[in-house]
Length: 567
Image (tube, rainbow, N blue to C red; front, side, top):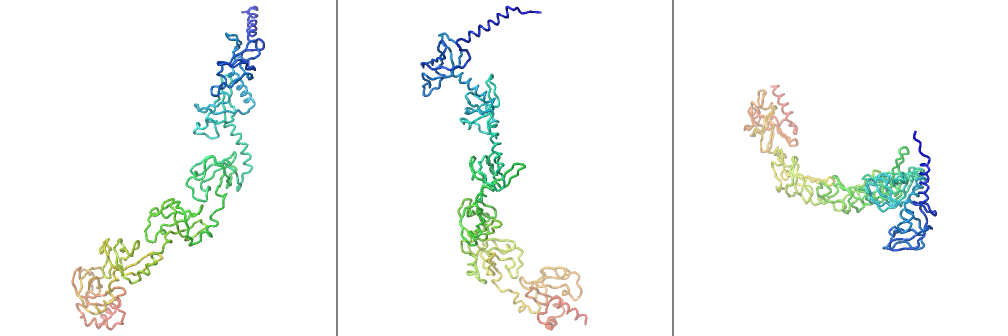
């Protein structure tokens, strides 16, 4: 067992006491902070009296300088840190900077223990956050800067805030701050107060906190509410930043409050009266209005005639004569235009307006200028399956339907007779002002040959014709250009005919007898059998015995069949 000598232990104790006695003399101890008075200010140092046997000195650079002039003078009383009792010149070595820092550390330590706040200035951006001067350098992590992440931390440099000390280690010189903890605490206090006021219909003060494409988040005090873009203005808003900026202070109305999920829907436009309440009285039908084009669609243009009230000009109401395929052909967003109110539907918040109504309706003038029966002359502007369009006036075309091209020609397609650019004459048949339709006819330029057909081809008369078509029930024979008659299978021969094609074929030149002519139905009944056997006189006598106006093919055949049976 080793036993330490008693004398050795006494010597160590004596050495320690002696060393301590050297450090403490006349009440001055190295490492202490003592109060001193400035007794002299020299070019390189300041002389301080701390009540010790010799005076102390501090480097002049430790004092704040303004325009090169140190801010210190004889008589100033300051706290200093004792670095060593004497230097080579017998002076006590002091430090003002160390005294200041130690005092700050003590204050920060006390504030951290009492959970108090410290104040400082953000001085630089560092890795992971910001550097803050609170008397000494402290670290503010990026996650502790605000309640929400801030993308541009550099914009905070130079700003002064209060902070909470969340980590403190004097030995390592490590201080970590948080502003978020302070804001969260403040927010909880505000939130409690705001929740007491939150109810649908309440009007609250708020600050624009954040803006998105669909709306803005408003800080109501500890709790955020969403102001949707549709509730920002009675008028049209393309993006929230047209109305609001971050930081704007405003009054908003609570539209809906979901207490369970703490969701608040806000309205800004509801702070003003709905302009549609007075729209019917302010904009009756026929009112002339002015407004700005705010939107274009395929079917028309929306015109803002007052903030919050828009009218639609349908493409059909933009021009009397121009065929407007898209409103952008006539107007652009931002244009100032005039229009006439056509209809107001306040219940559905719709106003129909027209631009063409500002000018006289040219279709009304057409009735005076082109009465029914008048002959016009114009160029073929377009050809369709159902007819041709003939230019009458600028922007106004008349339609000649395929059925009105010819009395006798079987027109499969108008292009058989006309081409674009052809100049034609036509007769005005009808003008429909309401539906903007102008009907023309070309065949009406000449008399209808069917009107005089009975005079030219009386019943019982024998004529020559050309077979145009053969069917199962008979053959069609052209007796003059464009006019065909039907030879029914029963009128082809005295014998029974099973197959008309065995009797005649297309292009055959044959003689037939006119059995009947019906101009109204444009039908002619013919007979080969009568031309071959009965003789003209017999059929003329037979037809003359019938009542005037009867003469249908069915009646003639029935009577003829009965007569043959009687024989």
